[in-house]
Length: 101
Length: 185
Image: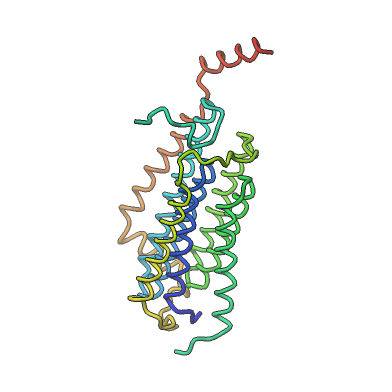
């Protein structure tokens, strides 16, 4: 594949920006979580691009670790969402405001 | 090295699918549609991994993300029954335009930096990470990054226990809600 490195990095930046916008705009906690996954994937694309352009496999190993931690994060996060839903009967971020200052 | 147009076309198609699906994740009113579009985005990213000579990561992406994570999302959506549409009223005035503006600023800033300092040259074909990809990753993982690899066992164990503890129903709370439901019914 002879696509310029820049193209992959720009794709990664746009994907991250979409995830960021979604995280700030949406209030459904589950969709906010999906946006976090989008951002993680964007960074993974950047890591793989740099691994390719420097010819160093370390970038790919870091992506592997990111995937492990992302799986852990999804499990704990969704368990927290289920626990909050039991108590509040809602998955809107606005309803989880007990600790508001 | 010359840039080849079929590669550019392929890249553009995959990128278009990924970014369009990502936009649909954000814009869908239904959480189930968001989850399915997330799966499409993750598939496209896996294709990009293959194009970037990372076939092992593409396989892991399909199994862990598109397989486990999206199914987990769908399972929670099904379990909670929250497929009804979200309340779209704006509680903080001006929050949405501000968020959109910030995201746009971020996109413009990063793309600008990449265009200024990045390399526009096509990637070298000589660097072969794809040929013995699994072996290369295994070599790095079990020598240089051995401690990090072993330590990932701890978060995995903690997550498994935490999921059980968090999702477990508390007995008194259950009996209380049940009695309340019985009373109202």
